[in-house]
Amino acid sequence: MGEILSLEGVSKSYGLLKVIDMISFTLGDGQMLGILGPNGAGKTTLFNLISGDVCADEGRVIFRGKDIGALPPQHRCRLGIGRSYQIPHPFAGMTVFENLLVGATFGEGMAEQDAEPVCIQILEKTGLKKKANQLAGSLTLLDRKRLELARALATRPKLLLLDEIAGGLTEQEAKELVRLIQEIKAQGVSMIWIEHVVRALLAVADRLLVVNFGSKLAEGEPESVMNNPEVKRVYMGIEV
Ligand SMILES: Nc1ncnc2c1ncn2[C@@H]1O[C@H](COP(=O)(O)OP(=O)(O)OP(=O)(O)O)[C@@H](O)[C@H]1O
Image (cartoon, rainbow, N blue to C red; front, top):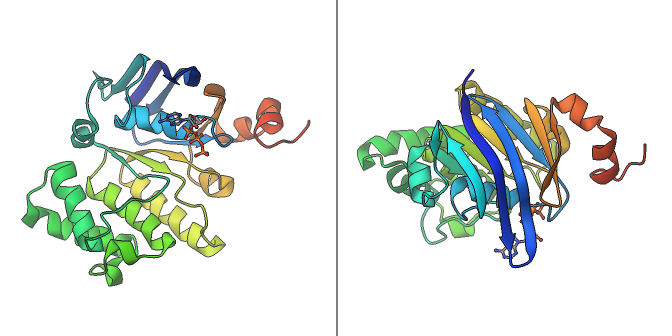
């Protein structure tokens, strides 16, 4: 199995605050890495560094063998990095379908006639078909989260970054989401999923990475990471 992504000694500061401190990890092709960590640990910043929303102060971001650290987000998207945002921000004045079309045409570069059937398929898959013609701004939070995922899928990513998409879902909805993510994974899409809903994450993650104060606290097989005494103490607040 080859590597799709590797971060090598990546750091990022905002003023005096070092938000990401020398983080390195690799992601195998078709694998799912789950990221856990307390609020403010630097998880979303890590995604921003991969998607190009911010650039690292030091270190390298290698995607499919190429150093993409200096590329803007739209170039990284075209190369195959799709992402959802923790706070959904769809194009509120456009319909759900139009939001997907933007992802497919501008994000991935598909011609509109090719993009339409792809978008319809994604709407079906994500349970948004009935809302295709609804304005994105009028959706409930839950449907906005679905739209975040659908929009990211419309860019036909090879690597999908999911930022807390299970928060606020009922148990049943979380199960459906997990099924959908398993389906996407089965199609060979590599994924990184930041999630506080640990049960959902454990259902699909091949490996876990725990971040604390911008540094890697633990990484490895889910079971051994969850049993790591330092993870229990720092992240879960459990004394062992
Ligand atoms: N653009 C920015 N300017 C200044 N500080 C920032 C900026 N973005 C993030 N930070 C700070 O960096 C730290 C890490 O933020 P980040 O959003 O990456 O954490 P997180 O682990 O995703 O948190 P959460 O679980 O609450 O989403 C926080 O202290 C945050 O306030």
